[in-house]
Length: 126
Image (tube, rainbow, N blue to C red; front, side, top):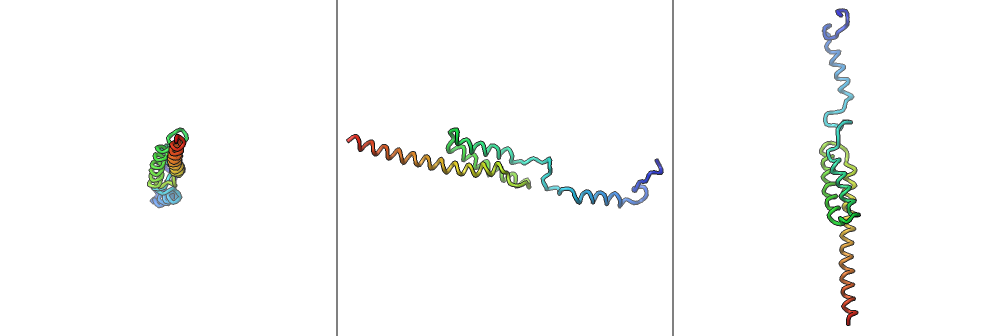
């Protein structure tokens, strides 16, 4: 056991320090996302996309509004954690805006058609 080389005992402690700095040089910085780090906005992104797509099951205005809000929150949380943009949150946000505009246009069109139908019905009764 005594004839094994140990750099600490030989007074060469720079050997272990060089190895430590070499391995640290190629490791990720402390703030960088690691392979095991999970996106904190991932769940909000999924819920955002589902809420935006809930337009097709009858939530014409409420679903897209929730999708827009949660999509923005998901993207913000991901950026604050130093991760790239949250894709599901981005799509929930974009689709929420599109579906909200389409839903509001549909409501306006329904009101206009209702007014036209009510006006033509009153003329046909005379």
